[in-house]
Length: 239
Image 1 (tube, rainbow, N blue to C red):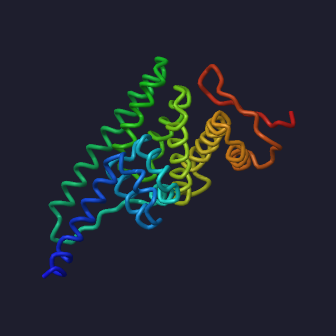
Image 2 (tube, one colour):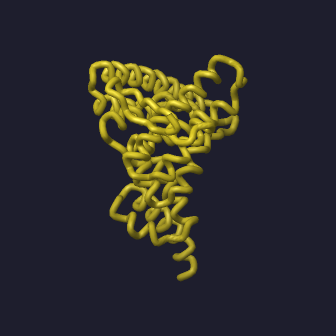
């Protein structure tokens, strides 16, 4: 009888612990002491619940490798033929989210133009959460750039690192000579330059040097700064 109770209750206890760890920040200290596999499960549940900049920052503290794995995966839901109504409902919700993401991204660009970088960062963050296309990097890229201009380094780092992963994934599916691929390469280069500034301001010299090597392989080093126009300008340190 005792064994039966354990068999019935243990899965419920596990699910309860998982939900509590994913949603309650006070559990993070306990989660950090868990084995790697358990931390990875918590991080996945945490990011499924909230994958905005703050959610990514919190998850990275618990298991950075699990965050990178989550960011690189396309989260797909598979349904049987008998679930056509559910699939249609999800497709309808995704279409609505895509439209909302486009509208929010446009609003964020308008806020940027008006000089409200912090407001734009928040708007782009919501747009990124609404985007259902795994390789759509525009909202999270814009969030990262606005966050840097706003002075929010953790969000800038999370946004730009995620954008670069999405750009890499997008380029794998494109003809490298078409206009879309060329635009993605230009965006990735500029995001790496923005990320160099983020790393430099965070006193992470090794990461800044690595980002410089990826952005400009032939340069001795990168001297990058955030200009008054809101763009990042980089020069070879040999100059």
